[in-house]
Amino acid sequence: MRLLCAFLALCALASGQTGVIAGSVIDAVTEQPVRRAIVTVTAQGTPRRWATVRTDSSGEFRVDKLPPGKYDLRAMKPNVGTAVYGASSTRELGELIVLADGEVHAGVKLRFLHSATISGKVYEPDGDPAQNATVTLLHPTRNQGERALQERGSIQTNDRGEYRFDNLAPGQYYLRAARPDSMRGPGRPEAVTAAPQYLGGSHEWKNSRALNIRGDENLAGLDFQLNSEPVTAITGRVFAPDSQPGVVTISLSPIRDDGLNSQMTTRARLPDLAFTFDRLLPGKYRIEATLPHEGKAWTATAPVDVPTGNGEITLTLAPALEIKGMLAVEGPDAPERSSLRVQLSQPGRIPQAAARVAADGAFTLSPVTPGEWGVDVLTVQRPAFLKSALLGSKDVRFERFMVNPGAQDTLRLTVSTKSGEVHGEVDSKQAAGILLAPVGKFHNLARFYYNAAADDTGKFEMKGIAPGKYKIFAMEKLAAVNFADPDIEDKLDSLGQEIEVIEGATLEAHPKLIPEEQAREALP
Figure (cartoon, rainbow, N blue to C red):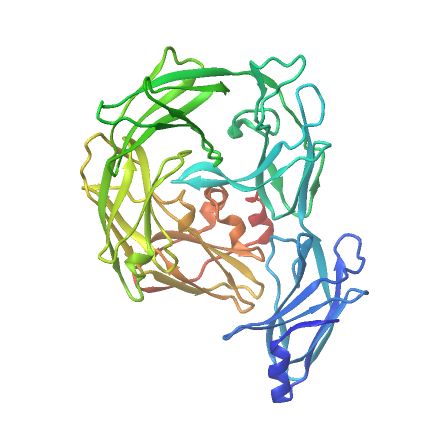
């Protein structure tokens, strides 16, 4: 065995203590030894101290000269899997090892759980393997409270059309395959292309097959058969004042909610400022024209429905809107305003309108086109939270709002560190996952879900909680992060206890323990 980090052992040598934790790492399925796994022993308390060793050829390990205390014990092999002492699945919390002065805790067994894998093939419409097709893995999330997808990775198929995703945590996933290049060659007319699709053949993720990963499954044979679909073209012209000659940038973006932002760009040039986008699949798009002029942006935007839109598209440039604002900070250890960025965003739009906040709190967002937007403050970390957001007199905190032509309202934001704390105890001698889920208008916002773990005495604490009403849940033996989803929490709603977190205050809570089997029924 090779000692990689001996901080704990060095501390023990200085005090003459000789505690030992020793055992083996075995495969949970085959019970064969797991060689060269990285085993980490972490002492609970402050400061956090740890020691790390590798298993030998027999899968065994030993960490000695440990001070008395409580220890977390786990093992891992990158991109292969993990083992946590006391846990039989990756969704469970582990158990702590209590080590007395000079005690030898031998014969420990860590059951190694392999990460899940997803694999399959992508085929061309003619049945040949699709080389260099892009397969994207996506996970359900929330965008301004609405169901959406977030990309978790993408890979290219090999020369046999094969793809594989490794090291997947439990949860729900969607798969999408796309062929970026058009279909050309003998017998393949240029009026068709291999259309992107989700698993099962649907163009829309909400109509496709979801994959529920519960443990260390190996889901193989998840194949895609791409289909040939007709493509079309759109044409248009840009109108600009005569005093603004130049090259206009035209971008076309699909309007989608799957988190896969993409856009095509072209140029419109004098004398007619005409443009064309060809090889477009049917769907809804957003088209936008931009022209820099005398230090400002002139823009125009319009929705396009392909192929039902008739005639030539016309875009008339006008000065882009600017939204000016002020950001205030409050509370102890509040972040410097100059360290923050404010962003306006639209689903599927690239780029967004963002600006760094000045030291006095002022910022200007540009270019902003008329339409629906959402606002957020970037780089805000807990315990700081966005306390308020007003555009004129309208509350726009985590809500989409319309920006109309000629809008001049000021955006006023407040970031606060006056968060609350929740301390408590669960009547259980087993580890329990603690979840706070927002009640009311923010129920669907993932940022307001908080999770922690109760220790082996049932005690827990949660800090940096944004003020508001919540329901608190305690899941026996299961990690609460598995439940930090509105759809999952809804299944447990009647088992939670409603609490209110007050700004800058500490609340005591004693949630009722939800039995493990009952809690598991809510998981996908």
